[in-house]
Image 1 (cartoon, rainbow, N blue to C red):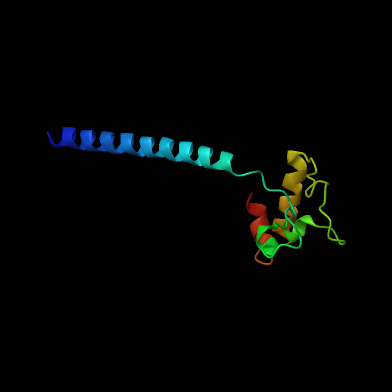
Image 2: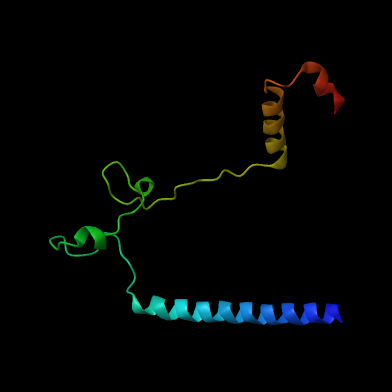
Length: 106
């Protein structure tokens, strides 16, 4: 009998949680429609609240002259499993805790 009560209580809680999630998503989507999309450095420069309305990008997204970088920030080099294994073995062999007698146990 107590098991049925637990199942019923958790079922009710699950329905309340899912209902709350759906309600929050609907509220969030309706609120996001009310605001225009933010653009970088938008706003009148002479207004007293311009510093609060202006959004600036993260400093890592700017080049040396202060303009937004439009190129990829990370380039990944493709490598084979054997290359990765060789690099990891070289790192392991050069580590300070590695002793020569432990390397023959593999």
